[in-house]
Length: 345
Ligand code: TXA
Ligand code: MG
Figure 1 (cartoon, rainbow, N blue to C red):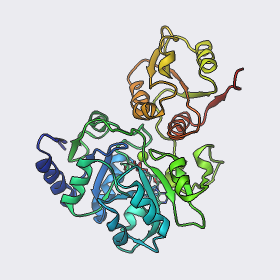
Figure 2: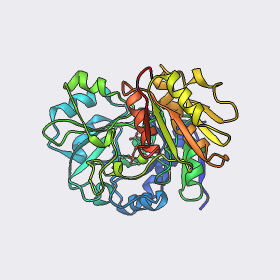
Figure 3: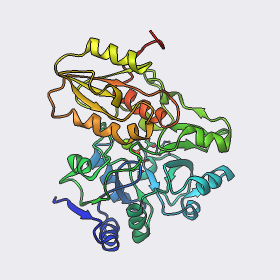
Figure 4: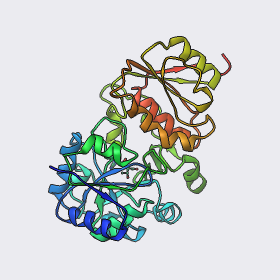
């Protein structure tokens, strides 16, 4: 299959073209503010099944539905709590996915048979225009092949999906760079299933304290079932093994330098970019700039594939603000292979 690259030179025409492909049951790579998604008509079972094939995605990992406005929530969800409407009013369009009880109309292919569905309204003009033009909710996981780092530009999308899908809409690089924050609102208390582009602190300012699912910060025990099925899979991983080093920047830089050699890949803060001579160094932003780190972390992880890198070390921000999401992606890429240095050691 020849994958068409749709540019946004004529935005209305581009949205119409992508929408026509979706309505015909095709797959389209779509820019969002978080990462690129692999979209299909979320009410078309056959189209949704093709997403799983193209990604090589396990059959028990449900998809989220993308809607153009909060008013669509009632079409696909039941028993919507007041908190969900409040959060949608405050944070949509934006990087928040809410897990809610689903209506019958949502196909099993989307939810993998669960009684709940994830819904989000993306903050990207191209995504919103395509969804509106299609007139259907768009089911879209991140557009990577399963297990790979998520795509944050059209080039990444084509690296993984060229020849497998009908089209990619090129909406430029993603402004957030890590996926949406996932909040489960179907239990007794709200629960964070995945940290993402909307900081936990912003949600807690509205809802009070939120339970953070264990799978966010720790590896799962053998046979343990996480609440977000996707959290159990090895994810975001480059070909070479990754070790995450946590602690003060100067200490982690020294530790990494002690363990690095030729052929070591290094993800570091900008302040330490010149500290690792002979290594393949990928600075991802200043240590205090977690927004920049979020924008660059997936590109850095991807960039080692095809390079002669046999091991990767990564500096890691603390678990605050967007740092929680950046740290989670790095730790998952490392399969939770973490070296924790004492502060000031
Ligand atoms: O930012 C994002 O959320 C991107 C863009 C494209 O919107 N999408 C994305 O989708 O990251 P995906 O499929 O890569 O990640 C969705 C995660 C998976 O871990 C999945 O298991 C979980 O959400 N999930 C989906 N539906 C769920 C449900 N009903 N209950 C619990 N977890 C669910
Ligand atoms: Mg994904």
